[in-house]
Image (tube, rainbow, N blue to C red; front, side):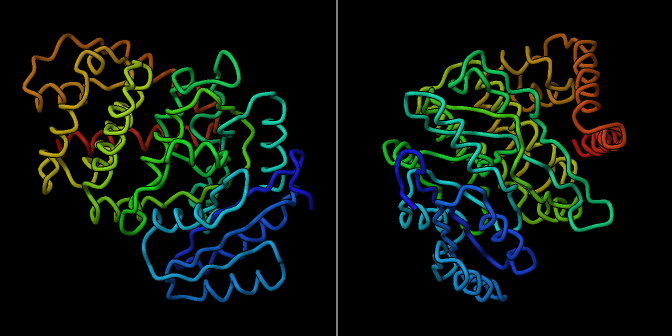
Length: 371
């Protein structure tokens, strides 16, 4: 197939480590895309299961698949190898335990072609696969569905900063490869999974005003079960705050001062810390020191004036910073919670909203007990 401007090559990078139970589904979802001009780069990151054999079987049936067998280096280094090996005009990332719906690439590329100037990122919503592979599995809208409404398209992230508050979801997008090269954007080569998607999110979204967004969801993301999330928090307690600091380093390096972006990044920090407090508590090893360091990098006025940050989080912020906590408008926060509840009703339905609400209060009690 011609790689003309009407059918640019898309390089799909699939970093794979011990994904045997899900890999067939992931690869079949790429192979079945309605857009056919794909280069599917499967990188075996030292798997110890049958992942490599599955890749090779797919490659034998589909000449678009390239298999790279390498020793284990982690998610970031593996994605970088994929970038180095890619030939496409556009880059996409598929994690091997997820899958994508058939129209993803055709639709995102069609959106990019609507504009005369080059587009750097085409971003979409995604499907949350909640409690995956269990009888309770549900497919739900992502947490920013319906909330990304920039005044114009294309846009800069300051006009859609809500994207920076939620799951990085770097895989629900395509990236113009030349943009990544021009900006020197690479993944941090952190051992294991390492949440290398966090810095990549900031580096990609905060260096361009040529972003497009569609609310239509294509990428199906298998969420971690609560048990796995709790086990991670106990095993890698401080990793989320380490990645938050990496992201803050990038914002400072880029000279980002827009309050909307900084508030969004503050929100991510409180979300990460809340998850730690629910499981480990403030007196867990290194938690108090790491939280204090993070808070010292936040603008206090932005924190205290943010109606979406809970009164308890503001009091903790003031305590660890050694600041006097100003009057907190609890009513404004309650109104915000009610607004979030109405949004959840519309976005995920009654049953899931009830679950989310009861889960919120359960976690809120756990945080208060551990602060």
